[in-house]
Length: 235
Image (cartoon, rainbow, N blue to C red; front, side, top):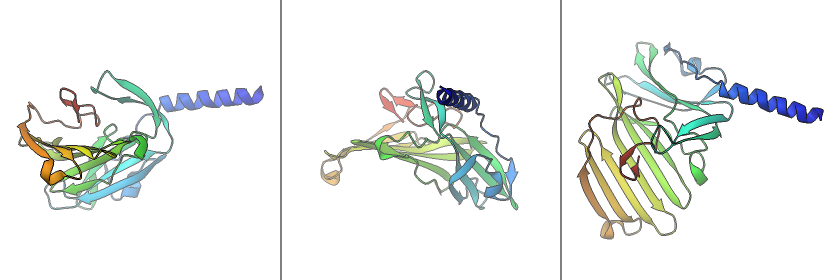
């Protein structure tokens, strides 16, 4: 009986603690990556490159909490379809280089997929990369149907705008594939459908305009798979 009571109290304590977890406010400026990692968090990815056009190497990184906790995560439409998953929270941060210091330009606690959100293939997070001032965030996952998601955010007019994206799916057994590439600056989507093995001969590519009043940002695009960009088509 005592053992059961101890287990129950431990569970209740841990549940209360995790539900009360508040994301730390990252340092507004730092001289080193090590100095900005909060207690109980660890650095799991980082990349450097010019993100604001000043020809200096800025810094983007992903931090992960030390323990798996219950998290309410959006699916489907960003607001109403919430499910609870037990996983390690993650933070995306960007620091702009300014002299000998790095100054915080972004802290986002939602957009980076967690290690349990990739399905049968495991952790979906692929390495960050920076190209032509775009911060590129890449994921992969699935089981029989595999998927790859890529998002290119660009700092413009004091906000992080989604400039490009890609949603690529394929079936392991049949080789059936669908590749959607989005250029939100030119408001164009190109869709290629067919098979992986017969790509050049049989696949078809169709371009169409994207209806978009405003570019999505980290403030308006909470996490992958929650933007229904067309009926039944999620990004």
